[in-house]
Amino acid sequence: MTTQYFWELIARSKKKGAEQVEWLTQELAKTKPEEIIGFEIEFSKKLEQSYTSSLWGAAFVIMGGCSDDGFEYFRGWLISRGEEVFHQAVNNPEFLAEYLTEDNLQEDEFAPYLEEILSVASDAFTFQKTGSFEFDDDSNTDFLNELEAQGYKFEPADIEIDWEEEELEQRYPLLWSRFGEDPLT
Image (cartoon, rainbow, N blue to C red; front, side, top):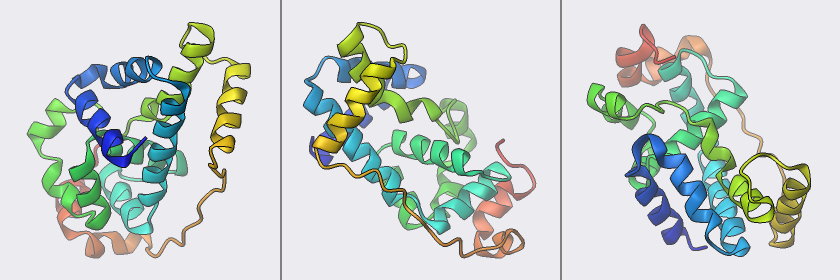
C-alpha cells in the first residue's frame, strides 16, 4: 500500500464520523490480505514517526497527563484526523491548540484519543479468516507472521523524554493557555 493510498483511506473514513473505525475495518476486509498488511505497515510507520518527546509533552498538556498507552491512543487519534493535521502536529505540536477548537471538539467525539483504530488491520484480517471481527488467536498469529514476512520488524522505538512536567507551561504556551487548567480528559 502506498502512503498516498493510506492517507486517501483515512480521509474517506474520516467522513464517516463516529463510524470511522468500523467503516475503515470493513473497507480493508474487502481487500486482499496484502493490502491489509500494507495498511498496518503504513499505520505503524505513522505511529513511529509521531513517537516524539515533543508530541508526548503536548499530549500531556492536552490531556492533563499521558501514559504510554494513552500516548499511543493519542497518536492513533492524530492519524485518524488525516495527513495534513498529522504532519502539522508532528512538526509543531503547538498547532493542536489551534486545531482543537470548540467546534472541532464537538464534531470529533474521539478527541484526543482513539484506541480502536490501532486494531483496524488485524480486525479486518481476522474477519477475512473467520468471518467475524472478534479477536481470534490463530488469526492474530497469522497476521503477525504475515507482517514479519513482509519485512515488518517488531522493534519498539525508544525516545528520550526531554521535558519535565514543571517545564510544560513554558514549552507549550499556546496549549497550556487552552488546556493547562482544563485538560480534555
